[in-house]
Image 1 (cartoon, rainbow, N blue to C red):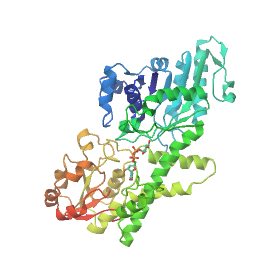
Image 2: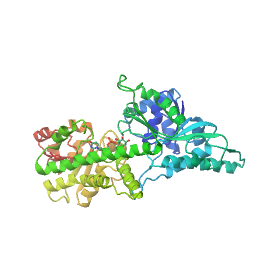
Image 3: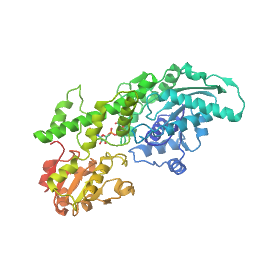
Image 4: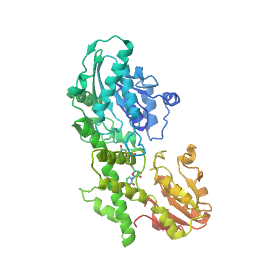
Length: 470
Ligand code: UDX
């Protein structure tokens, strides 16, 4: 099938590369020329395990192309994915201007033949119809500028919107197809999804999308090819949009819940890790997303929870539960600073070393990373901050890190520190030479902000160690 993906961020690039790997002919469009050149050479602008291998293979087999030319991409695609960012505005609302620009440019470049326009970006509930109207506007604008009006109707979708006069034989539907991939395992998640959600009122569009995803639904690229077919959930557009927000809000709330329990465990002398295991084995609760720590960050949870709160507010409903999940999360990020104050008392002039900076391991992403709040607070309290992160230390990326001395390895980090704080649970932090690091430190104290390390082993290596809720 011919596919066009507009926007090559995490979601767009991974979707494009994986669909090409699954046998489709994909053109990815991005307006950043330098990035397009980089991707044409098979390099990935993001750190994502396994992505560059499948990109290179798909480029070689001529099933994956990159361009800045939207018109060429739109002409090529039977399925057109909108996969541009919807960052949060200051009030928590989603900024949909990039989606709007892409929808308009799809309209103004639409050629003949039936097309499915897919909202892959996480868009506010109700955006399916809105995208459809913008595409129609784009078509109308182009026809006005060409000044050759020939009235025609637009197929599928809701009758009330087709009142917009359009020109030419343009036939399209809009589908909401939210993305659930996690950074750091995005390729794995794409080929091993728990479900595929398709929201549309058009049977024709759903049928085309089912063909597109057939290789994934049939587990042709899955880790366990014998697993049952991937469930496909077909809904109306608004419900599909809501599924994305509700899934992220639920997971974020689940993490805030276990962090709340961890903080109570800290006070009563219970071990939250044992508690999480004990409750997670209840199949109604489930063991995933019960890892206590510094809380949730990244490009999705904070933005999507805020957007859902904002949408509810717009409809006169105050979401008390989601607001509480956010405030628990904000407080959670600073728990390690409180623990440092408990052991070191005055932080002014003390040197604190951060193990890890990214919002989670196996990514180079610092967006809304808890590390940034820890840094801001330590810096406000007059501490000197050093950090070592396996990716950030090498990448030269220093945005938001002006107060931090970024070291090139963990031993340099430890040298002269009054305490270390594990912020991100990079696997390699489990095998560092902690005995050597303890000797290099001024005072060998370690706050494990993710309950990731073996406390007994650390204590044997000479550390005084504190976790979260244990
Ligand atoms: C998330 C969703 O999982 C994904 O389905 C959606 O499409 C995008 O948002 P991502 O942001 O990549 O993916 O990371 P995820 O692994 O879900 O972790 C999110 C945050 O929660 C991280 O900061 C992580 O450290 C934190 N987290 C996760 C916990 O603190 N505890 C947990 O048990 C799980």
